[in-house]
Image (cartoon, rainbow, N blue to C red; front, side):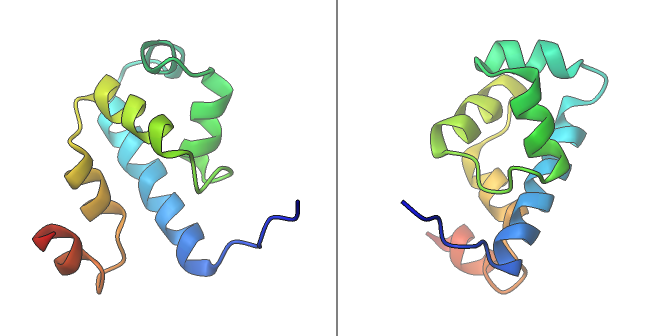
Length: 90
């Protein structure tokens, strides 16, 4: 199975997600947060640095729970400007 190349928009969303996770993690270690979410620290590192810009839904859910983030906040933060109003009104 061949994976379709990611668009620039998908890369930008991934960068926004990574920045949000780093900010929410604060001074907690990557290892601590990853363990709480049931992930490897390397998986979290890849998401935070944008090397894994489209993580699985349940990975995002686990990270949001570990960091005390609401999914609607994550979605709105990661959305590109023209998408945000649509996401917030859903």
